[in-house]
Image 1 (tube, rainbow, N blue to C red):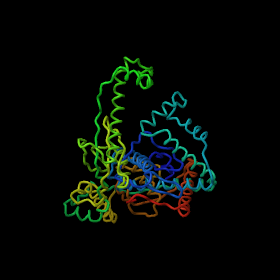
Image 2 (image 1 turned 45 degrees about the vertical axis):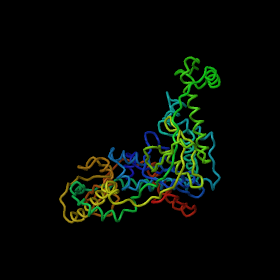
Image 3 (image 1 turned 90 degrees about the vertical axis):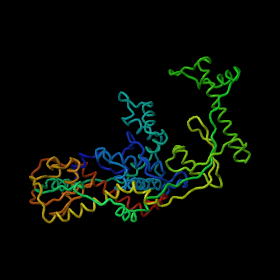
Length: 488
């Protein structure tokens, strides 16, 4: 297993409290709606540490990218649900928060200098071997992160590392010998690979409804919001020369060419007029907002009605989140700019989430039903075949011989061998992460001679993982964890 871990680190969901902040190349992946009514977008509270929805999105996105790589690009939202990726993402964050609470208890701090040293040593921000601030800004921008967000995450990473440094884990010579012996064990086996391609299922509405009855609590409508809104379209006014000149002189730095040089009034005139129109539109929108709140709107102003849900055709996600913060006591939202128009919004009522009708949930339900039913039937088939199966017989193989397992990818082979050599059963079957099942029968075992020495770092990594998990389990009893979103 240790050799597999060394060779395939990128496929492991490594211990999060000592991992590098992963964001490059990972877009945010959504998975449904939360109760936006919680304070500041918090999804959990662990002791004195708050976990935000943004934290959860990043953790989920990082996991999704790791699984997608492991599945060679064939990972999707349905598989994410089956693997419980939401819970995994939240578990990583709560584990991290427990360690941050321990840091608070120890009064540990991270200075700005420590953050700067770490930041300027990260090579994905380098140009010609040197940290480049513009590349730093550019990389963060492409990944929808601000510098303050990234540096806040970096501070947490450093703080956790400082906590763990106070609790060092060491290895002994005997542990090295024991692990070397374990890695020298070889097996001669017969194996057979089963996939769900050989399984057929009943996908009729009758069968699907029975499945839905057991799962329907997981298929809820989005929380929605009935609103009124007023739209102020862009103004297009005429301005005298004095007004244009005055605005240009007061705001020259707004009007630059591609080289960063300030444009002349003549060259900037179109931009100056556009800015004046923008200012005028915003002023009209603010006046509309005030009159709306006071009930003094002109009768000619058109008030529209709309129902907003998580994915909305009229408003972006940020606007939906802001609408969700409105209450019947404070129902008005100040004008917001969407494209070139200003919207003033009033909340009429919040419509709670409810269980979807079968017909509405059917399309979403079918992939999960198919996957779980095939998985169940494949397990039944494996139990039946295990008594007497004809498979492929190998020579003596070790944990490292993934290339000698035919009909499986390298990733599958590595996973199979790791579980095989951890198993205490002579004849059984192993369920792989992607759903395949491998029947096996160990025919002979042998201890092969090997000059290869197991790296001390591998043993240390293993002991660290065991220690860290024990530490987290202990901290769970010390700091209270409160989950603020339903379903997790």
